[in-house]
Image (tube, rainbow, N blue to C red; front, side):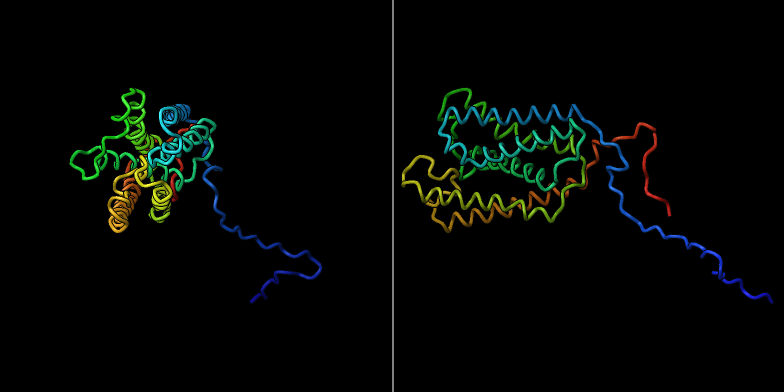
Length: 262
């Protein structure tokens, strides 16, 4: 038998050992070229300008303090800001905004539309009100109200369904999104306490009118609405993971990256 050859022979340089490559995650941006979406940018910018214009009209025709205290106005301003930034990112092929922010803006816009149509503008609802459009005969106020409570929520949903990639919303974000409605509840009740009894628009929403119904009823209404808002957030997350991808792009070479087999 021959003796085994030693790996390192005296007087000769040591045989280099092969280095083991450690797996490292590669970001998608390093593999896929960012895609400019000018049409998406234009549509989002138009939606943002429409929402901002409706808020500006209300500010001109009503008290700014009263207008800016409205949940629908605040949600429209947030949506306009988010869509404006998202439009710039789509135009310059940058990464999209965090899903926690876009999901919150979507949820609040949908909440404002549903509350208006199901509770405030529905004659069968115990909280139905005439609305400021009926009190103010100006056609501009009527148009602004329809834009804020109908057009803006519908545009937010269409932007989410047709112009954004699916699967970005997560269930853990649903409870975080409810922090703003809870803060608005505290703001609305504090505002009502600071204003004198009998002041116009002391409570902006009849289901939050503590002077008329008492805090026990108001907190009960807020609890039911909070549970409904959470269920709506969960529904949006579920639909986001079930809907098809409307923005899938192929590379210019004709090849698509696929996961390895085996």
